[in-house]
Length: 152
Image (tube, rainbow, N blue to C red; front, top):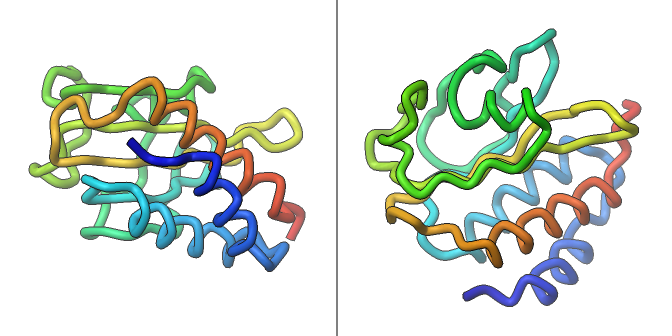
Protein backbone atom coordinates (compact mmCIF):
# COMPACT_ATOMS: atom_id res chain seq x y z
CA UNK A 1 0.00 0.00 0.00
CA UNK A 2 1.33 3.41 -0.92
CA UNK A 3 1.61 6.35 1.42
CA UNK A 4 -0.49 8.74 -0.67
CA UNK A 5 -0.29 11.76 1.69
CA UNK A 6 3.52 11.58 1.45
CA UNK A 7 3.35 11.07 -2.33
CA UNK A 8 1.07 14.12 -2.68
CA UNK A 9 3.58 16.26 -0.77
CA UNK A 10 6.46 14.96 -2.90
CA UNK A 11 4.51 15.57 -6.13
CA UNK A 12 3.62 19.09 -5.01
CA UNK A 13 7.31 19.83 -4.42
CA UNK A 14 8.23 18.35 -7.80
CA UNK A 15 5.72 20.47 -9.74
CA UNK A 16 7.70 23.71 -9.55
CA UNK A 17 6.49 25.00 -12.90
CA UNK A 18 3.03 26.40 -13.56
CA UNK A 19 3.26 24.98 -17.09
CA UNK A 20 0.75 22.13 -17.38
CA UNK A 21 2.80 20.27 -19.99
CA UNK A 22 5.93 20.19 -17.84
CA UNK A 23 3.86 19.24 -14.80
CA UNK A 24 2.06 16.46 -16.71
CA UNK A 25 5.37 14.99 -17.87
CA UNK A 26 6.78 15.16 -14.34
CA UNK A 27 3.61 13.69 -12.82
CA UNK A 28 3.71 10.68 -15.19
CA UNK A 29 7.34 9.94 -14.41
CA UNK A 30 6.71 10.35 -10.68
CA UNK A 31 3.65 8.06 -10.65
CA UNK A 32 5.42 5.41 -12.72
CA UNK A 33 8.41 5.50 -10.35
CA UNK A 34 6.49 5.59 -7.06
CA UNK A 35 3.39 3.42 -7.61
CA UNK A 36 4.24 -0.29 -7.80
CA UNK A 37 2.93 -2.74 -10.40
CA UNK A 38 2.20 -0.27 -13.22
CA UNK A 39 3.04 -0.83 -16.86
CA UNK A 40 1.61 2.49 -18.15
CA UNK A 41 0.84 5.90 -16.69
CA UNK A 42 -0.25 8.86 -18.75
CA UNK A 43 -2.58 11.64 -19.67
CA UNK A 44 -5.17 11.79 -22.40
CA UNK A 45 -6.36 15.33 -23.17
CA UNK A 46 -9.65 16.56 -24.53
CA UNK A 47 -8.35 18.62 -27.44
CA UNK A 48 -11.15 17.70 -29.87
CA UNK A 49 -14.90 17.34 -29.18
CA UNK A 50 -15.84 14.01 -27.57
CA UNK A 51 -12.30 12.71 -28.17
CA UNK A 52 -9.25 12.11 -26.00
CA UNK A 53 -5.82 12.77 -27.53
CA UNK A 54 -2.63 11.22 -26.17
CA UNK A 55 -0.58 13.47 -23.89
CA UNK A 56 2.54 12.91 -21.78
CA UNK A 57 2.98 9.31 -20.65
CA UNK A 58 5.41 6.63 -19.44
CA UNK A 59 5.24 3.13 -20.93
CA UNK A 60 4.76 1.45 -24.30
CA UNK A 61 3.36 3.41 -27.26
CA UNK A 62 -0.35 4.04 -26.73
CA UNK A 63 -3.64 4.08 -28.59
CA UNK A 64 -4.71 7.41 -30.07
CA UNK A 65 -7.27 8.91 -30.35
CA UNK A 66 -9.88 7.55 -27.93
CA UNK A 67 -13.53 8.50 -28.51
CA UNK A 68 -15.65 9.19 -25.43
CA UNK A 69 -17.87 6.27 -26.45
CA UNK A 70 -15.13 3.62 -26.17
CA UNK A 71 -13.08 2.00 -23.48
CA UNK A 72 -12.37 2.79 -19.86
CA UNK A 73 -10.79 6.18 -20.64
CA UNK A 74 -13.79 7.13 -22.76
CA UNK A 75 -16.14 6.14 -19.93
CA UNK A 76 -14.21 8.30 -17.44
CA UNK A 77 -14.34 11.25 -19.84
CA UNK A 78 -18.02 10.74 -20.69
CA UNK A 79 -19.23 10.29 -17.09
CA UNK A 80 -16.61 12.51 -15.40
CA UNK A 81 -16.27 9.76 -12.81
CA UNK A 82 -13.23 7.68 -11.90
CA UNK A 83 -13.25 4.24 -13.46
CA UNK A 84 -11.61 1.40 -11.51
CA UNK A 85 -11.55 -1.89 -13.40
CA UNK A 86 -10.23 -5.13 -11.90
CA UNK A 87 -10.10 -7.01 -15.23
CA UNK A 88 -10.08 -4.96 -18.42
CA UNK A 89 -10.70 -8.10 -20.49
CA UNK A 90 -14.18 -8.22 -18.95
CA UNK A 91 -15.01 -4.76 -20.36
CA UNK A 92 -16.80 -5.25 -23.69
CA UNK A 93 -15.41 -2.12 -25.37
CA UNK A 94 -11.97 -2.14 -23.76
CA UNK A 95 -9.26 -0.71 -26.02
CA UNK A 96 -6.30 -3.09 -25.75
CA UNK A 97 -3.22 -0.94 -26.34
CA UNK A 98 -1.02 -3.37 -24.39
CA UNK A 99 -2.15 -6.99 -24.12
CA UNK A 100 -0.25 -7.25 -20.80
CA UNK A 101 -2.54 -4.74 -19.08
CA UNK A 102 -5.15 -6.33 -16.84
CA UNK A 103 -6.34 -3.66 -14.37
CA UNK A 104 -6.98 0.01 -15.04
CA UNK A 105 -7.68 3.16 -13.06
CA UNK A 106 -8.75 6.30 -14.93
CA UNK A 107 -9.33 9.62 -13.14
CA UNK A 108 -11.06 12.47 -14.98
CA UNK A 109 -9.40 15.88 -14.71
CA UNK A 110 -11.86 18.74 -14.36
CA UNK A 111 -10.55 22.30 -14.67
CA UNK A 112 -12.93 25.24 -14.10
CA UNK A 113 -15.93 22.93 -14.52
CA UNK A 114 -14.77 21.52 -17.87
CA UNK A 115 -13.18 18.18 -18.69
CA UNK A 116 -9.50 18.79 -19.44
CA UNK A 117 -8.54 15.14 -19.79
CA UNK A 118 -7.89 11.97 -17.81
CA UNK A 119 -5.02 10.30 -15.98
CA UNK A 120 -4.85 6.65 -17.03
CA UNK A 121 -2.97 4.00 -15.05
CA UNK A 122 -2.60 0.41 -16.26
CA UNK A 123 -1.31 -2.62 -14.40
CA UNK A 124 -0.40 -6.14 -15.52
CA UNK A 125 -1.78 -7.40 -12.16
CA UNK A 126 -5.52 -8.14 -12.06
CA UNK A 127 -7.46 -6.21 -9.38
CA UNK A 128 -4.36 -4.04 -8.78
CA UNK A 129 -6.26 -0.91 -7.70
CA UNK A 130 -8.11 -0.66 -4.38
CA UNK A 131 -10.47 2.03 -3.15
CA UNK A 132 -7.47 3.44 -1.20
CA UNK A 133 -5.49 3.61 -4.45
CA UNK A 134 -8.40 5.36 -6.14
CA UNK A 135 -8.64 7.99 -3.39
CA UNK A 136 -4.84 8.41 -3.38
CA UNK A 137 -4.55 8.83 -7.15
CA UNK A 138 -7.49 11.26 -7.13
CA UNK A 139 -5.52 13.24 -4.53
CA UNK A 140 -2.44 13.24 -6.79
CA UNK A 141 -4.60 14.51 -9.67
CA UNK A 142 -5.90 17.32 -7.42
CA UNK A 143 -2.28 18.20 -6.59
CA UNK A 144 -1.44 18.30 -10.32
CA UNK A 145 -4.44 20.54 -11.07
CA UNK A 146 -3.65 22.94 -8.21
CA UNK A 147 -0.03 23.28 -9.38
CA UNK A 148 -0.78 23.87 -13.08
CA UNK A 149 -1.80 26.77 -15.27
CA UNK A 150 -4.15 25.51 -17.98
CA UNK A 151 -4.64 28.83 -19.79
CA UNK A 152 -1.54 28.62 -21.95
